[in-house]
Every structure is written in C-alpha cells, then in structure tokens.
Length: 325
Length: 160
Image 1 (tube, one colour):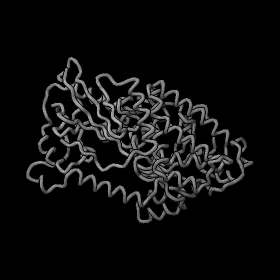
Image 2 (tube, rainbow over the protein chains, first blue to last red):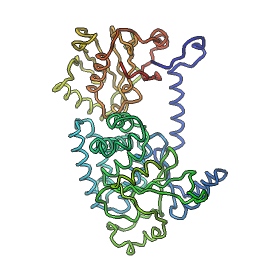
Image 3 (cartoon, rainbow over the protein chains, first blue to last red):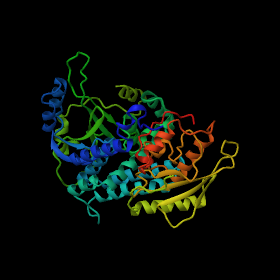
Image 4 (cartoon, chains in turn red, brown):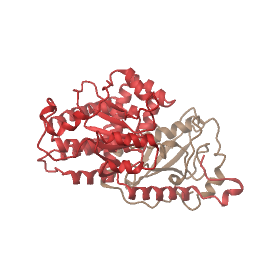
C-alpha cells in the first residue's frame, strides 16, 4: 500500500513525491545547521539552552559542569551514537598517539570480520566499510603518510562518504556481535521490541538512520573492546524527589582493564547522543596506557570527578537494570 | 509502463567497484530462479525471474529492472518489474513493488541477490493473484514518472 490520499480530498492533498521532496528539503536545511559532528563548544552552551527550561535540567547541567568542560554535537539523523563514537574514539587516539591501542582494536576488527563471515555475510558486502575505518585509524597515528591533525579529523568526519562508511562499518560490527551472542542479547531485545534477534538486526541495526539503544552500545563496545561512558541528562530525580545528581553508565567490555575515564564519553538526552569532554583537549606528548594516573597531570581533573560505581557489563543483571532504567 | 530512469548521476568509483564484485559473485553463484541479462550497463541490471514451482507463478517469466544510484550501496537501488508485472497484491500494474527492504528498511548489508530472494519469497507466498486494492489511484499518481522511491510506503501486511 502507499499513502497517497484517496476519496474527495485526493486532488487537494499533496502527493507522496511532493511530501517527500518537502521532507528532503527539511533534512537539507537541518544539515546546513549542523554538520555530522559540530565544533567543540564550552559546556556553557548547554546551560544557555536550558536557561528558561525545566529546573531539573538546569540543576543537572550545572552539576555536569563539575566533571565535564565541553560538548561536541552530533547531527540528529539516527546515526548520532555511531558518529559520536567514531569521532570520540579517533580523537582519543589522535591525542594519546597510542599505537598499542590501535594494534589491539585491529585484532578486534579481525574478530568481527571472522564473525561476519561465519554468520554468512559475504566479504564484499562489508570490506569497503572495514577498510575505510582502518584507514581512519591509521591516519590518527603520527608519522604516517596519511597522518591528520584535529582539524583534518573533523573535516574527515564531516565528509559524507567517509563518515557514513565508518558508521555503516560499526553497524556491521554491532549486528555481528548481537547475532553471535544472540542468547545473551535476546532478553534485552525482547524488552525493547517484539522482534527476535534476526529481525532486530535486520530492521534496527543494519539500516542507516536507525537509532541506537543500550543493546547497540553494549554490542559495539564489547566487539571493539572500547569502554564507553554514557552520561544521562534527563528529568529524572532521585528517590527522594529532589536529588539531581547526573547519572552515568560505563559500558565496559569483557577483559577490559579498569579505566578512570573511558575514551568515549557521550551525553545522552532522550533520543540523542553528543560527545562530552572532561577537560580541554591538548596535543600533548605521547601518553602511555594508564597504569599510574598520579603521574599524568592531564588526568588530574578526573580524580575530582564524581564517580558512580562502575557496573560490569558481564553481569547480566546490572545490564538489565541499565536497560530497564 | 514506466521504464524511465530517475535523474541519476553516474556511479561513484566505490559504487562501481562494489557492483563489479556483486556481478562476479552473481556469475559464480546466481540466486535460484534468476538470470541476469548481460548488457554493458553496470548501472542498470535486467533480471529474469522464474516463478517458483508449486506456487501461483510456476512456469511464468517476469523481468526486473534494477537501477543503481551514484552512492550505491549506501542508497537502495530502484527495483521495478518491467513489461507485464506479475499479478500480486503488493505489485502495482506500473511495476512498482511494495516491499520494505527496497525503501525504509534498505541496508548497505544487502545485495541484488538478497533483494531477488526476497522478491521471489514474496511472490511464492501469495495466495491469490490480484492487484493491490489501491492500484488505480496509485498508478494514476505516478503518471508524472515518479520513482517508487518517492512513495511513502506503508508495509502493513507481512503475510504476503
């Protein structure tokens, strides 16, 4: 069936193609307002946004400022989680110049590739997406022919071709992880929708523009071995009806060493993800993977950060809680 | 019958590469019941569909026209039946097909081959040969030559 009008109103009503052209025009106008990833902005822009708004939001935004200093917005096109993850992770590598981490994630990418093939995906369907992401990984390490600086990274993540191909690669990885561990993910998927794992992957993971939930974040974080923090900015208050502490959840992949602050930190507002910064980004000397945080002056701010206990994603109960929350 | 191509740019390098790979794979391992008619046009495939034995379309032959956009596979191809489209509750007399994966549920993880398999499965599960109830109105509205990709489809019937 199609939605073209019938009956008496048929002639007055816009046709589908006219409506769609209108939708495209709106989307194009939105795109002009915000790139795939925006500029880094001080957290005060959030305060300004809620100035006349809900008091719970205002209180939470103020508390957010104790830990986080800046925000980078992602376009709200249904791909904002994946797009924010891409930028945040690549920027983290660019800053830390952590070759060990890149070697580690490359092993996980190989694992995902193996999983996709075992699940029956033909290699030609995902190899272009995979290689675009691997190229970006290579470009954020120093001393490569393709090495980029932060401005060039921003430019690449705003390029439709590169940006969408990396997002799609993450969708492949997420789908493979969910299908591979179908038994683990099934109860969470049933909690979100009335679909089985196959249907969920086909309709809510693999098509571009489908929004992400805890299931997607858990799967991508586990598959690539990258811890992700999601900070929740919503109207909820504590059990006493007053507490406006800002909740967060750390998605920690199995076997992941404890981290003070995950490399990817996202701000979630109902229906949307943006990138958060805990401190000013500086292009500092190489920083080894954190063993003794007291030796790393740039991590000082983190110690003051208010931490809620880190939940283990391996513990299905805590994940269930997070998903139900 | 509309066989007109929507205004379309030529394939990007990566799209052309990907289609070459799909075509090679098709030649080695074509989906059962389909035959790609060889042309020198990579951007438009004409595919013969053989109705599956034991179904309402057994022994019948149809033709699909698949047009690939510049940024395939990020964007879905346009897929329509040409010449005489099969009589089916989801296939309009102008060849347009109401099938979610061709529009909203398209994913770059799909291929021409997986589209063909879905279309054959849609044909095979039909219990009656009939046009969609809104066929005449829809086809009339398409007289300006619009693509089925410019339709806002409602996929409210999973049974057929």
